[in-house]
Image (cartoon, rainbow, N blue to C red; front, top):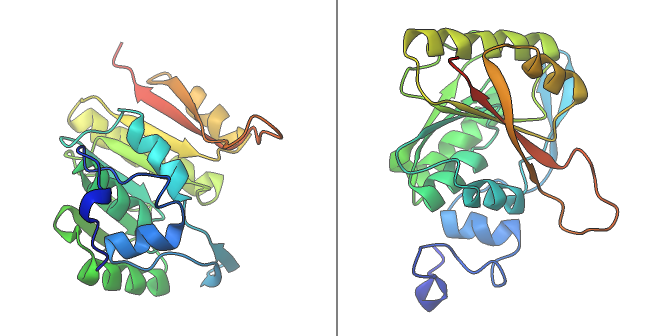
Length: 217
């Protein structure tokens, strides 16, 4: 385990000037999530690509997630989102992953991580997963097909109807069709768009986290 010593700030967040690379955060968290690889799925191979730590830091700094929240990460891969946000914010997290290869690696990270007490990993098809009423934050990064995405959102709505609560959906690198679908739901409204570009030059319009909130009105 990498010892942080005096390089940790008073608020527990590590100076980003010192730890900029994903490999360093992996060492801090005692997990392995870096690198790209092809993962077999039912409809062919798909690249494994975790959310950049800098993007997750933007989300953590947004104030939309607190220690009292529970975040559900759909398509969690090896669990980076869950471990990182649980570490920085002290929130509870649940990772949902369908692919057995990635689930196995997520479980390995769960065994080695310094923050495993607040993290759960579940092997399940997102379209079939029943959302616990304790969950109030939802994260998607380049999610599955639009058909599966719609079924997943309906599952979230079912959970909301069982127990109405303040709920937020975070959609990183969102395709237009996904944004249009969420905007078409009367119970949802777009609250914010968190810019995750590192430079003012050559901005990627999709490199944002779109934030949607449930509106009971």
